[in-house]
Length: 284
Image: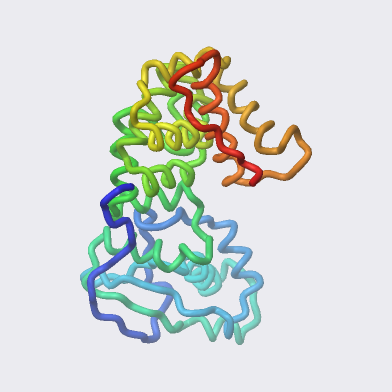
């Protein structure tokens, strides 16, 4: 188990609530998701001023930057710029909006605040959460990013250097530690080379589970065993078949990871009469 604390935290700092002209608020996509102007326009066209909520801002020197509620703020800006037609009472209502204003935050603190505010509501996509988490300097994302950079991998890409399923990769680091992720990526590349499916998070998760449970196993031998199972695309399909019990039941992320554990353990045991490892019953 990893020894680091991967929880979120930001230092104590001043917070106040006050009315703000939305036109004075700026945006910095480094510390949150990118601005989707089409989405903001849709919000503006249907805006109910009394349901606007309280956007969260950061006071940077003499300027205010949106931390959460960026699209609602931009919707108000569109309305006040006359780019969206709304009833007069709505236009008047958004000339000054109540905001939660945080002071004395670094850029990393802003990024952490954004993740904290959005994590439970699942409004942040996993790739955005990863990017922002790295900026925030959060240990979980930093440790994961260090391993991915070592292997010259990028999050979200479908290329031979792209990792898909970053939530699964983060789970490996949280549950088994960055060293196991590093080892698992090395084994996968030794087995299959650099292909898009080599880095599939569920497959890597299966390797990580087996290697963390059985540290006595030799990585080079594991890679050879996996290579004999076929290419990574075929191995991924095998995991899916196991997870769904040959398409007779629904699966889920946890089910696929358990299936990957079984598939990797089975690969190690293939044609072996000694030094076998336990194979889990994933349908218990």
